[in-house]
Image 1 (cartoon, rainbow, N blue to C red):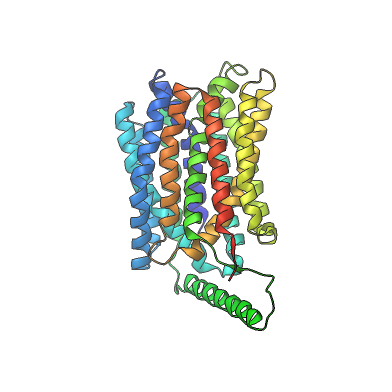
Image 2: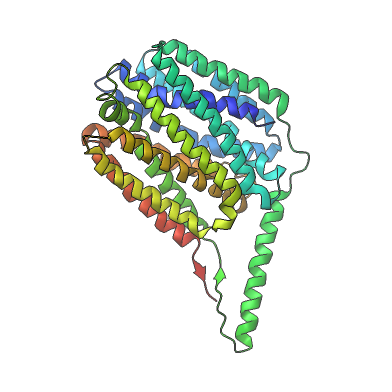
Length: 407
């Protein structure tokens, strides 16, 4: 039940994530796409050191609930002020402040799951959390759809986002508790060291007996993992930051001239359905799939990004194909995220629980500026091409991350 607050939080941010770029473009139609890129990039850049800070503090103090409450309380207040502002530079400042405080709940949330469950249950636990909160995001998008259908003003939408975060705060005050004992990540680290040493002894023994070992000594490459994660986040951000504008201007407007934003929300609702299905599968089958197959998911995302180039040139059925692509991207991302959260809890040492979010933030910050800038200056075709290339580079890094090293 402790996840209930996060459910309402995702409802509010699911609605805000799609509404905000549309809102900024409405304020300044000529430069709105560029301004939103600056807004998103600035917010993610300032969140990078914040992720390290919150991760360090929660592990140092061994208190996690306080940082979750700080995140939800600040989101409630700052989004309320959004409703009082229609000046883009001021919105950028407020959004940057929101980003710094908002990420305070991410490292504690990951640690809570890792410490409340054994390593064998991490994939299932992360998948359940992500799937549960994805349903909240889905409901938030549905609320955005209905609000756009009934043409409610921006103030009403932003106030609803603030209220949902207030509900999340109240739920978390009542339901979230700090774990009594914190040792699971330490045990996993010890087990990995022992397993690696044992494998090395077995291979060395075979070689001393004149037997050529068939197996290699598998050692994960943390640097490749970090670079791959940054590149994956970069590619995702390049693709998704300007995507609501692409859907509104290139896909929805020719079909639904009365309310393009309604169709934007409807498409993202279906995309969230794909993500929910992915989290359900991740919870039951990811460990059986094997880690090597996860890199193939990144390659699949690369192919989908390249496929968007052809769809952008289509005159008919563009809505259908874009929706199918987004559902597939959401499904693939769900599988990827659950695995990455689990493996990050293995390889990230205590005191650096925010490293995972910081790496994602580095790629996301760069992509949040690059994506809208390319879209504004060169068009969306180049956005899709660049995203596909960077996804492919990420795929190569994750292949290196799992490469065997023979003794």
